Length: 300
Image (tube, rainbow, N blue to C red; front, side, top):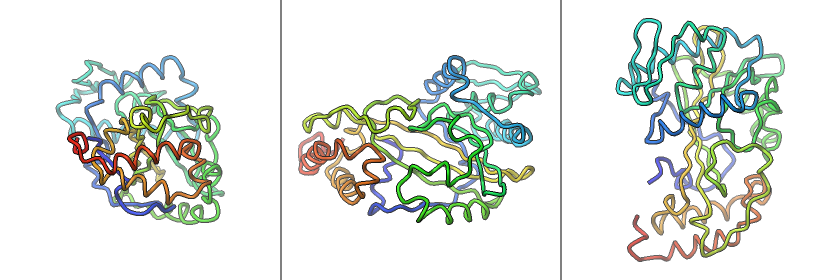
């Protein structure tokens, strides 16, 4: 069963959906820990320019973020991390890192330690802007397209964001307190379980059949966290990505009804942005059938 099913939370609406975050729960480790870290290693080796970038003005906050992780991980996840002097070891994968060797690449080390993508947002004249990121698992966006840009420009493709959410989001970023981090979830449906999804894929979903939508689609959920760094004052935007087969995500008639309702409530422009519009009819047909299923598989 997927860890998060945000479509169960009520009617679809364009809101931030912010919740208070216990700092102890800042980072999550799940059953895909080793596999996702292996994929991050591969991407950092084979596509470094696509997944890692930082502007010069982010140097201080990169170091501060890494230090927070080095303090947090061995204390919160003793079974996975061990810190000994200037060395941190991943007890699950067997990797060890000499911290001093990463003095010039602190964000890369941070990106190798956790499943989360990590983005650093810095306040400027035009509002908060993206100044650095270790972004191995983007959902239809490219780091080089967004680096250095403010929030409203980053979210420009999102329907109604500029008119309805941009002022609220920028004010919210300004209000984040060091001791009061927050989190939210975002979801989409994709036609492949690939974690690294560049923007070229958006808008070109493969055709699906009403009979097999559950096995041809995946629920992609981002658990997003925001916390302010106490030293530099910059905001860390963390993204932990979960991808599960749709048939697992709607393992009951109630879940199928809920997801069907969210898709019907979603405006066409948002459904198009999320690449749902071209597959909406066969998807809804599958969900409606699942919603009426009273067989043994409905309760999986």
